[in-house]
Picture 1 (cartoon, one colour):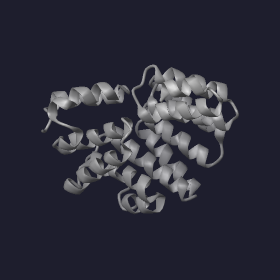
Picture 2 (spheres, rainbow, N blue to C red):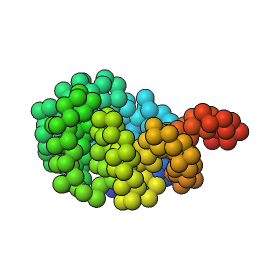
Picture 3 (cartoon, one colour):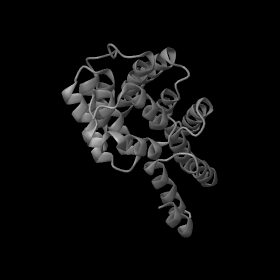
Picture 4 (tube, rainbow, N blue to C red):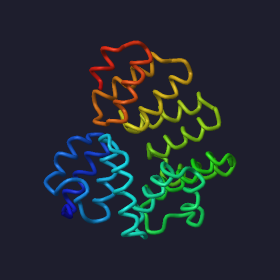
Length: 235
């Protein structure tokens, strides 16, 4: 079923706030995630599936949306991200190389597209060009927390961990308990030998955010720290 625009907007808002279980339960009124119709709905279904612990289903739904509507900006963007996860940066670059701008997209999505180009270029070790694209994304949408998370990823790839952490924390200033930023910050705290702060970050986020990947990160860290009872409760 194709969710009506107002309902789709409500489900998207719940997802953006990290309330993925609530979005999923409300969305069951329109069928299971694979049954959602319309490109925007299919993309959202894929994103929800990934946050609910079904990454392969999520990628499949997003790639299906891109195949069926290849010109749709959101399907192109999230499809490129799915390709990055499945095929790596070189294959993803093949989908990004010929489209410096995401035609027809909102400024927010254009900024995310530029940031994705930057991260993929960083994986390919072209750091000068990668930084140029991240700066372009920040110029388009300086208050977009995801762009700051992508900047954090670039800095981590460059082994600039302190700066990467600062970028992730900036994303959290822009949106409290933003799931990708909380995971990025916790990961960087661990890389810097600050496991206590990593544990505090993930524990705090898990009380607010409904996300299987975040809970998995918390359980893994608790296990590494010997907190087995707590890890079992998290699982």
